[in-house]
Image (cartoon, rainbow, N blue to C red):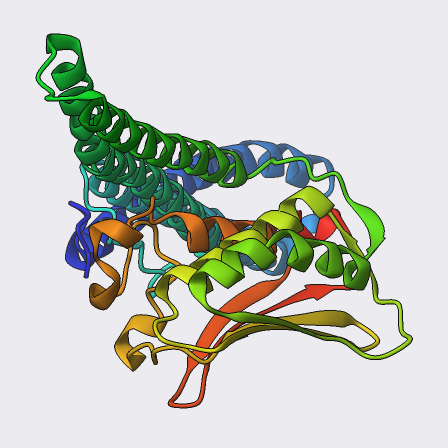
Length: 381
């Protein structure tokens, strides 16, 4: 669809008018030059004829061939000049059309693209302009998404922080005003305020980690590490939490094999910490949490599995969204920041890997793969 003020009929009229004007100018020039040539011919040929009477015999042939040759040369040059002017005018009209279309796009019609249907000679220019508009619109939409994401982050965190903060202020207010019956009740109020404060601290820490991992130019401290040894150490640290959740921790790795991967150990530990904590909190009534590692020539695969409640199919694709929680897990006892899985996804992404979740009646599995060798340029390429 054309939005230029120059319709195809107007373009035709402009080009046609240009051809008519230059044809008229060339015709006038032809008759003017011919008049001068005829006058000069008659004047000088008479003098030549007086000096050489034999030339009178050649006069008809010379006169006919001279003016015919001049006319043919003039017609060829004139047609070339008219064609050149028509081409210049057509190019000018095309540029005017492109400028009109750009002006239409600049008025907020970012879905519109310039058609190159009748712009054969300008197709490369139009194609480049359309690509520039596409990249500009994409950048604007990305900026809009970032702003919207920031607003959602602030709104959701403000909402989640308000509840424990209100409890902390409420119970500390009771202690401050002396509204308790005995020391035991005072300790109970102080303990609740302390628990809520820890919850607030976890939320703030998760927010800080998510903000840091969401940066495009994040610098990872990548080094080759033995992930088997790292996981053995981590599972020891989580034994108490697993015991409290009534789960058995299992590590499934190849025997007598070191699995070396280029990773940021601190960030990778954060991924496993979030996945294990998620399994303990939301796994339901299960018996175990299993961590498995395998490696091929290109990448290493990690699996965190639990035999707890099955996650609905419609929720699997949304698990890694910020603040998303499966409805059955929305209880105050299990409340968190809702950023744990989003942080895990961000860490895996910056290691150029991918992460996803699978769930069936047998178990729920969080699986992620990371290349064995980290290449920084891959993120930009």
